[in-house]
Length: 530
Image (cartoon, rainbow, N blue to C red; front, side):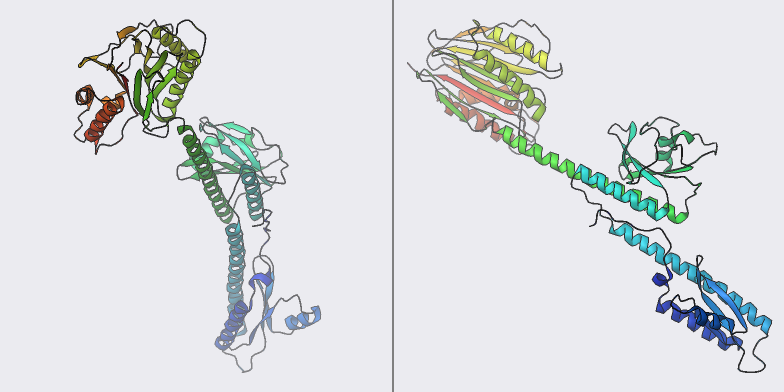
């Protein structure tokens, strides 16, 4: 498609519309007329290829002659010769009136024929316009070309397209015709009551004339006598406006209005396609980014045994979407201390993952620092809380349990910031551990506490997120913490992996057939026999 498509707004020439079929119809009409009135009637075309003398003789050698026009130029003449029979079927006066009436009819038909060909040519031009775009620059180029075509089809001097902003509060001049010369006032126009743009959008079109006591006269370029605005409307609402200006006091014809309405509709469709194309590109990019980011959140079961052989861990952290807000961290602090963190950020998908990533980064940074509080999970919790308060709004928060395992001293210290209470099993007795403070990210400078457990061989710790305890079946019944306890009791002497499988399989069996699972995290820590 030629991106510099141009047309002319001049009427179709006689060579374009005065074809052999139309000429044959005129000659047939003259033959029938001659038969009815008894006077020989001939059509003499106004052919430019004839010599002036020949055309003059054809026109002057007659009884009566009258002209046929197409509204712009002379098409030809109807020439009446002397009748072959005396007396003729009708008098000279009657013949003249009939021939004059016929000439008027043929003139009207010729004008319609010319206009029909002109309109067909314009429609073909509109149909041949390329409304596809592959980039923003290509879009501007196509819009410029379309506006050029519009002014050449309608005779206006200049045109400009104003794009509606995302907030639907103003329109801004984005594209002008290539022969731009007018200084357009207010290239950015607020959509306020009683403004020209608001009136245009509400009415669909607006005609402003200079010196016409029009309240919107100041919106015309100073050297323009008239401005015609058309709304660019999609099925979902307005996308902008397009204005046409001229130095002449020009009132658009019905045909010109149809042409401009067609062009504004095509512009709207083109803009919608560009928006859809950009949205598709953004979705593809986001999908790719999410897939890449999700590799940082592996969903396979994690199985780990300490190098000293004193304990083992089995766990999983899954997400409902590509990314999620659940957290499971296992960080070695030194040869006998390990940090365990399990958390759940508010929300779903990317927003929750951003909160989780902030907390995860803070934990990793603190764990690798030289601070003296790595044996105090409450102090670590307070530090992470202040980071989250500083970086996120108050409606974004996170629950978390931070625990520190010391195998040399044989203790486990933990602090719980609003997270579902873990379970501790020792000597076949199961207890729910207590909480110590508010959720992370709600308020700054919160003081947390911690508790300490003495670890014996075969002691068991179970951490989980609410995606486990709140797993729901098709009867809207929760798995609840009771389901976790039943899983622990069903495998009291099992390894960390066996306890994990018992609880996880029970949970999946319970929620089978239910929709929309949440992010889910389950972590089992088992102390091994000495």
